Image (tube, rainbow, N blue to C red; front, side, top):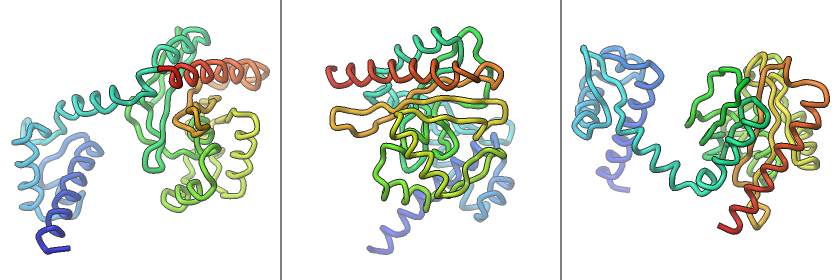
Length: 254
């Protein structure tokens, strides 16, 4: 690889580092941003100028923020995703039927990505947004996706991202995780018992394509007082499985 190619790759990496830092900081001035990413102010300023010229960053009152052009890019990416195209109406129906939150997730680079969410009339408000990228091991959606991935792929995900503890109930032991994945594979259902957010439980079913490859998952989530007993362990899993099956059929015949 030539010096020019190496420098070009480094510049691209720095650009995305700066964009992600702007999101983490909810906007920042050049000095604060340079400290956060540990780069010279001049380097950060040059990258920001380029991003601003391309309309991916806006500057107001001395602070830079990511611009709405990213919204256009994200919408294009999501609209091109077949799972989103086929499943979103079924996600809304599931939310209406259960009264709670229904979620649609796929996996990219070892992370779970929320690509759609439905809200029923009794849905709780949680800190999950479309496009959020979260660890797979601490949600029902993520675990049921991992359950249908090859073991070596799961090993690679755990090696890369670890098993971060987000609540007292988060699974942080590899052997315990694989036991949970085996149970999810046998039943085609995974549970989240306050493993990512305190006070929230969820159930999820995998969405498989015609070759039995997992392409995503669908879930129902709600506060613990609504997610317990037969409703949590039987009723909602059956509903999630039924909707997942409908989505699978629609994908195969679309």
